[in-house]
Length: 252
Image (cartoon, rainbow, N blue to C red; front, side):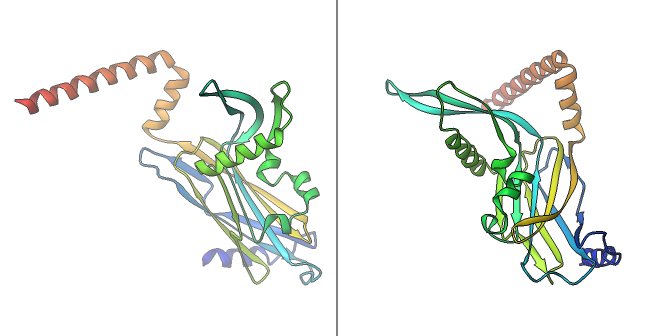
């Protein structure tokens, strides 16, 4: 509970606005090693006030965590002549490799659509369609398909009521990162809301990097691909030879 004490200390000096966020992370880096199975991240914070808390609307908090973004193509499977083939497609730009969102309540209830559009909070606001196959009109169906796929693979997590409030001032959100993380900067965004409107926001980053032999292999694959390929072939040949020798010994 020491982080509650830290937040209380930080809130001792009032902010310039009526209400503002003071936030922190349990860690600001994640190291991916050979035995990496995932990581837990605690996002915590408090609200600083110059005056008593407003009573016209309850306080709500939304926290998002997203990984590096890359372009992505989603294709629709179509059955032709008894077999399934790739059909219509849609290309999305800047799709987060991982996206999690937690809130104090049902997001559609606590967040106004215009503020969602302005701050791009929800997953569907963080992605954008860059190209459509000629004649393809149902782009919304492709967006929904992308969300279903990400939910199924675990790279999209929605935790409504995942943010816990204490005394209408302190909050925390727990995230469990999967083992198949993409390297890079992960962005944490925190939003303070009342009446569906965002009144303050804060951002912090988490650095996700491979370490040890995994880091060296990754650098070699990108910087010296020929050497990496030769070493991979030699290792595969050595493993095959070792396996054959073991089986030959066992048959004696």
